[in-house]
Amino acid sequence: MAPHGRSRSRRTIAAHSAGCRWQREQEVAGNNSVSMNQHVLVTGAAGFVGSHLCDFLLAQGARVTALDNLATGRLENIAHLAGSPGFHWVPGDVENRPLLGKLVEEADLVIHLAAAVGVDLILSRPVESLKTNLATTAAVLETAHAMQRCVFIASSSEVYGRSEALPYQENADIHLGPATTLRWGYACSKAMDELLAMAYARQYHLKVAVLRFFNVSGPRQSSLYGMVLPRFVRQALLGESLTVYGDGRQTRSFCHIADVVRAIYLLSQRDDVFGEIFNIGSEEEVTISALAHKVKQTTGSTSAIEYTPYPRDHSGDYEDFRRRRPDLRKISRLVNWKPERNLAILIHDMVAFEEGKQGKLVPAGPCG
Image (cartoon, rainbow, N blue to C red; front, top):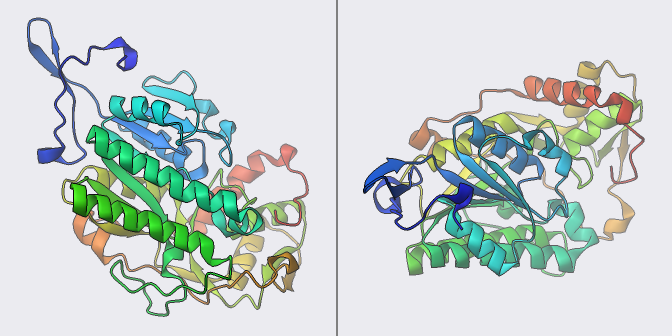
């Protein structure tokens, strides 16, 4: 049954001429056709990125179906959308093929964000995590191909691996470590997702694009899976020591979630993105040590900064990178996108969000 009970007796998928700006045409009132707003299926919608993307798409007038099994997503991330016009929450697994097929058929565009999140999860549950990343992407691509729908696949800067050719360009070589080191599992799973997406584009002419995210952060992000900035903010507000692994001189480039979802939206309005990979991130590098000091300054915390070796339970399966910075020329040329919010704004927004939850904060566990 079509969403909202609308007839689907006639549907024109305008992907061949208008990319993801499709508007469904349907017969009503004596063959007169009307244009409907874009209907987007977001997998992993209760996650950090997914929930913000749902917010943004709804604000643009799209209809959104949100699919999530809540394995790492949180219902509280989308609770505020309950009852919102155009929003439909579906609890379930991407690997449930009948359910996925129904939802993809009803949508115009699929944005696939569902995944095992972060390197920490890969190291603690490697089999389940790797199977999840590979199987869900395969299911989405196969179903999108069968239904002839456009799809965006979320990937990660992790795929660049050990490469020192900074800033990272989308067509650069990938330099990964040995399969005997589990740390590389996340990078490999995301690289395989990308390769499968490009294979569908090449062999079946599927309209698919890949989004490589670089250290996306912001309000609602959990510290449970190794994400450093929400961990620092939480530790500072609780008066705990800010834990810096290694010497703290490794750098990262953090991008505000509001800029990231805007980038996804701008790409979704184009018909020349398919078969392509796009970096999405910030060019503003900061050392992890400096990041800890910036969080302390913003929160006014007197917490100590504690430098410590990487956790023992990684047992040699973890390898950090000294730098991580994207080349943004490709996406900038295409959609004139650059991040509008700098690191200071990002930290401020995360602190403000966590302070709003101050009464609910409890000391974090060893990986929090």
